[in-house]
Image (cartoon, rainbow, N blue to C red; front, side, top):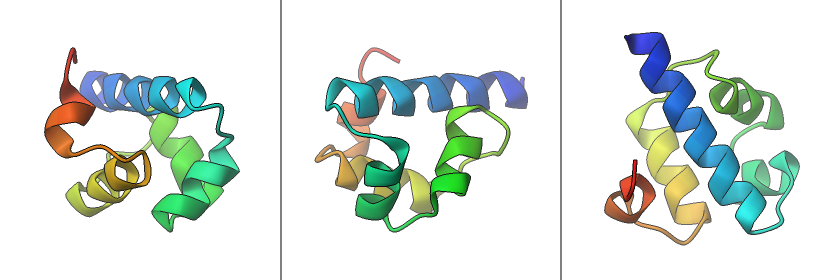
Length: 71
């Protein structure tokens, strides 16, 4: 179950990122994360923390409610 939610959140991050035409490096820079960490999150290999999730949402100019819309 935990893996499933990690994969689903990672997929959501990737979709939102690619809709903006951003590379992983661009989003990582805006969210103040490493590209490697972002890659692990997008691929569901790491469980995302609340702070990292908030940083990613803010970098994408979204609040957490908007991030999870349609999730």
